[in-house]
Length: 125
Image (cartoon, rainbow, N blue to C red):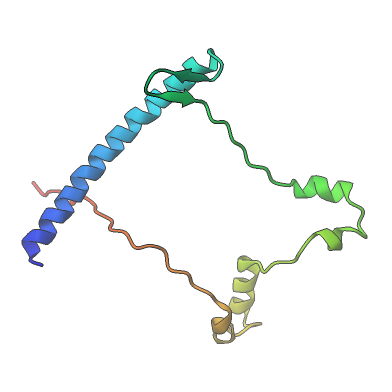
C-alpha cells in the first residue's frame, strides 16, 4: 500500500470522526429533548414507522461501611473476599519486600482491540 493511500485513509478517518463528534452532539441534544417530552406523555411515542420509549436503568453497589455496621463481625469473613491491592503490591516491590521478577508469571495481560488514534498537527505559520 502506497503512502498516498495511507494518507487518504488517515484524512478520511479524521474527517469522518469530526462529523461523528458533531452528529453525536446533535443526537445527545435531541435525545435529551425527547426524554423531556416523553416524560410528560407516559414515557413513549409510537407512529406508523417508529416507536420511542424512555429506557431507565440503574446499577447498584454495596456500601461497605454500612454493611460492616449491619453484618456481625463473626459473619464478615464469610461474606467477603480478600483481593490484591495494586498500590500495596507496588509499594512492597519498591521497598524490596517482594522481588518484581518473581511476580512476572502472575501478571496476566489482556490485549485490547487496536485502534488508530489520529490527531491534527498544529500548522506553523
